[in-house]
Length: 87
Image (tube, rainbow, N blue to C red; front, side, top):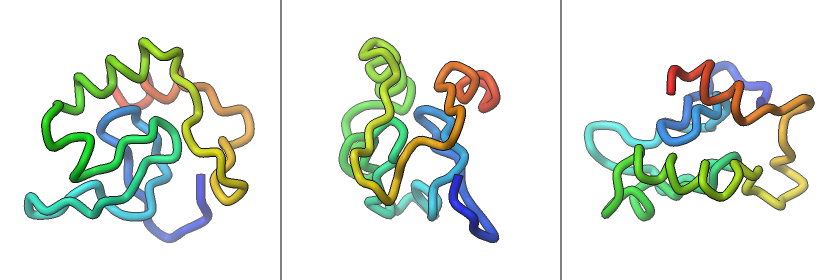
């Protein structure tokens, strides 16, 4: 998880380290979750967060980002992440 004063949780996979909220006042920020790869404002335009979550789970819950800037947190456990987020 990034070292920031405030982070946000992905409504798709429960990743708690988003730099900005997925949306505010109904407007998407177009950010991409490094955990599940959801691009807010694009991927969730025609599918619900629940549908996107189900698709990510069906793929085996892989860490999406291949950027060296966004490696998975040490000890990252996608199943525990989902549980911690209440999904």
